[in-house]
Amino acid sequence: MLVCEKCGLVHSEKHIDQGPEWRAFDSDQKKKRTRTGAPMTYMIHDKGLSTMIDWKNRDIFGKEISAKIRGQIYRLRKWQSRIRVSDATERNLTFALSELDRMASNLDLQKNLRECSAKIYRDAVEAHLIRGRSIEGVAAASLYAACRMYKVPRTLNEIADVARVNKKEIGRSYRFISKELELNLNPTKPMDFLTRFVSELGLSTQCHKMAKKVIKMAEIRGLTSGRGPTGVCAAAIYAASILTDERRTQRIIAKVSQVTEVTVRNRFQELIENLDLGINKK
Image (cartoon, rainbow, N blue to C red; front, side):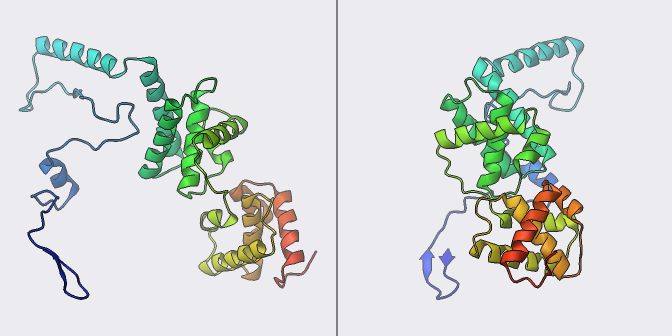
């Protein structure tokens, strides 16, 4: 029965529970009692729907199988692996998705973002956008696009550090697939990087709030237009660290935000010249 908590209206009676009829109190119980396989995933070339032959040489009762049967199972495994990857498209997907998983693991990205990047890459393959471009470049561009889509602050430099291609190729591939697939992604803003940079610099909540206030003031005055978001964010953090007496050097802030000290200095000068922050001009 479904009942409204506020007014007591009975929405429906004899409601069918779509969940399992069993209960589990930990992950081991859940794994033992479930009667279905792993969920479908875009991170495997066949979406995880094909049959897998276990690598253990034991039967259903846990006893070791004989040498004769072991040879037959070995041949079955070999043919099964060949059948799963049967043509060039599947080989392409297998390599690209393994690259995506490797890069996402190095960047410590969550599962839903990995699935999104794999879906973007699959869409690019179906639209024949891979031809004439490296698999690694399009895979890295798909991962960057997924980061932008989920508003996870990762710069092109960070993607290039874990990818096997340079930043220029990733940027070119990203612009191409974004246009062709009509992803319509909004530009990154300084605010997207703020929480991460403040955390890595070990600054307080008060400094975080002050930097956020500085960025909002800069956006109102149009100081963020035409400038790199990481540079503006770094300058706002530097200004906030001065105002809250939690000073961090420009070198440390530049290293965390992956910009040059000159960029931090220039953006900082623009902030104190155009905003009333109470910081003396040097």
